[in-house]
Length: 134
Image (tube, rainbow, N blue to C red):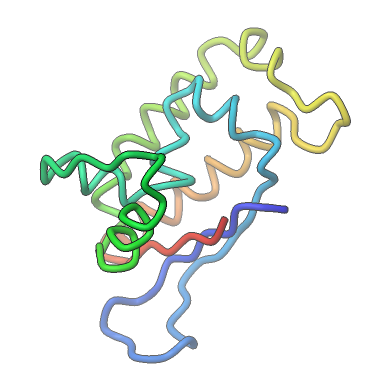
């Protein structure tokens, strides 16, 4: 199981509009949470909800799914949070390595590399629409 992220051209009307795609194991979600990256990476629609003062309850899966389905999140909406999370991640590698997956499928270096590549794409395509599949 993995998190799949796509950046799409906002002016295109078909799948060939994918500008960037990548994936990473769910085994890194706790590490991402500790670095402040969980919502920007796994659930970027929550960033929009917070900005709009919309309260989403994790226990209400239907409402959360519906909000995600109809919200539009762009690179500009999360780029600063991803940068901040990456900076935090890099500031204390030993702390974050405590959250490496015991089975080796998801380690600190994987999350750093993934986040660096994603951040580069967010900056390259500031108006791109973000879609995630968990």
